Image (cartoon, rainbow, N blue to C red; front, top):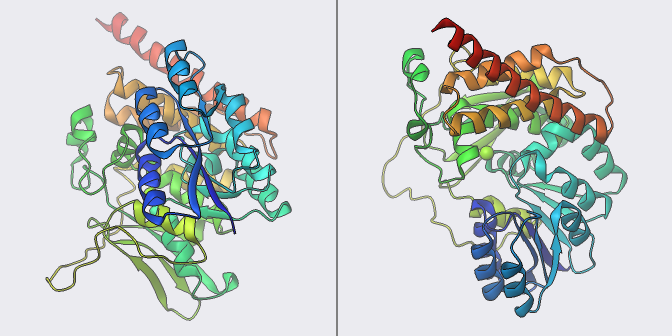
Length: 393
Ligand code: MG
């Protein structure tokens, strides 16, 4: 089988790790197509090193200078999101590793499935927003979706110990993020620097903030429902601060299977690329010559509203996933630019979900429309608050 990989979002944390994994694996594994948004210098370095046949600059405003440099490297250049979908459809791509953060990655993910490419999915938002389109399309075209998210990779692996019908529930582990033990008062005053200090994982800023609010786990609950065809009540979350058990599957007989490894994204990335094979890896191995302890505790739904909202979304279906995700993206951006407090992120998402008129069985346009509406709604809620605060003074 050919193993030519397109990495969408190659300059991000998952993308760079994927390139390392592919370099380690060697032929037939090859990165034949890369894409980047703003980090064009890094993309040029990657093209010099890995010599892909094609690249996409998804940001339309890329400078002529950058395009010139890429041209000299003898690679086909695509631009914009339309260019990205065109690149994934090409014949020199067998596997699409979707690692673009946020709803922006969705059209290319859909295009990959429609073109019958194997999908290694790191972009959890694609399923949260458009699982109702992606999953049926993948089934129709017999496309395999291999999860790259560490929790879902763990579930995928543990589930191979039985039949799908024998699964009683899935238990997703969560590190708890930097605020696992924070009081509500501390959460009210949490700064951006506090939120960016993740205890176990090194990741991009959006996902690190999502770990602090637990919206990352919220997205993962919804992702698990779609990937493993489970009702929301069969997907549970347990706090596990060491991030060594990446998730568990309980079967009907009461046996629980788990996947363990030190926290390193290169492990699930490699498995998604080599599945159904396992090949020697480059990551640090679990060391059991020294004693260590693993902790598990139930999550606090009071302090972390995101988890409660995830179950609401999974039960509602339709456009609600798109709304929750877009509202969260807009609120996180507002928090990063210092316009709202940490706790306001989940409040804005919840208000926006309450304001939303749910549409069942949406089209892609309906989903993108719900996404746009939710972002505008968050903006107007923030503006109303600012106006109210000014009047108060
Ligand atoms: Mg994860």
